[in-house]
Amino acid sequence: MTRREIREHVFVLLFQGEFYDAADVDVQNGLYFENYAKSASGEEMEYIVGRFARVRENFGSIDALLTRATSGWKLNRMGKVELSLLRLAVFEMCCDKEVPKKVAINEAVELAKKFGGDASSGFVNGILAKLVQE
Image (tube, rainbow, N blue to C red; front, side):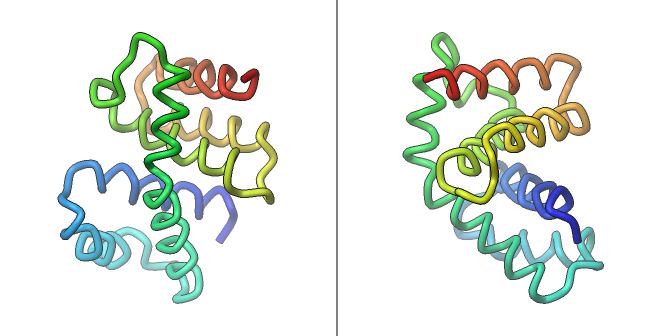
């Protein structure tokens, strides 16, 4: 499985997590792998779920950075696709030394084009570019 595919699976888990209580996340993740990520090996599933958990553990600091960068936008009013993509990208930019910032931004923009609306990619790119400048 490529890094892009892994990133996409983590994004989907983050996105679907926006619709469920924390207590239901493990069950929903299991259903996701059962139905949509059948080709993932046990090791890949473990990596994806671990990465998802690390992003969620850092929501506090990630959301603080996003709140500062999105003046005029409250995170709870932001689209769930964009919020999930931004959280993943900020995690990669700040917490994952293996992913260059430019790659994290590009991947988030590409996922926004695939899963978001017409303006999603520009919005995501703008917020992440502002974070890099800071």
